[in-house]
Image (cartoon, rainbow, N blue to C red; front, side, top):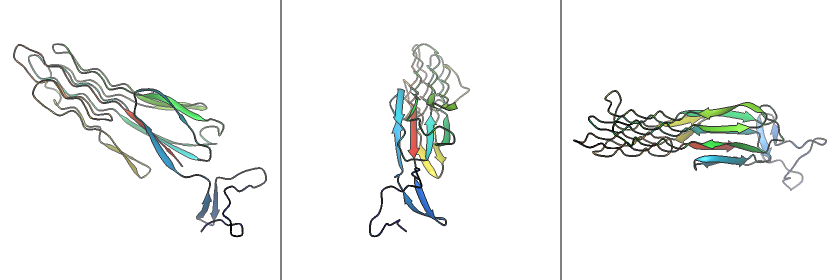
Length: 219
């Protein structure tokens, strides 16, 4: 049911000096000033995302960088763990002030693969989100790197899996597959790198972990 003024559909309504973002007729939503959309940030490093005027809620979904796979020498290297998922919802005017205009943070890079004899893979970097006025922030930890020359863990990198939040699925990357020789890198976002395979009188490096990612749903 649209909200009409005569034959026209207004773009804004006012109650006194206040402009509501939504109007209801009973339990039925009849008008909203904002169209929902989602963006994602995939480049490792610092970011700043503008908060659009008119949205009431913000879903934040993060995954950290995957850990790198361990190197092999006399045995195989182990796969790196996947980055961790974290998610939360902010309500403007409740969790954060309406005057705040941006979300800042960092998308975590994947950990490096082990590059020396029996060297462990590097840990993935956390992905973070911060908003002024929201004291806690949110952090998705990076995956741990795989140890070198270990049979305690699988050689393939660990899968990040998928994450469901507020009825929407967010897709993570698989771990690097097991192959002969140097370990394969993890798949984006968040997959762990595979460990290197055993080689006589030689070492094989592990694969790099995949970078993390951040999603922002405005509605």
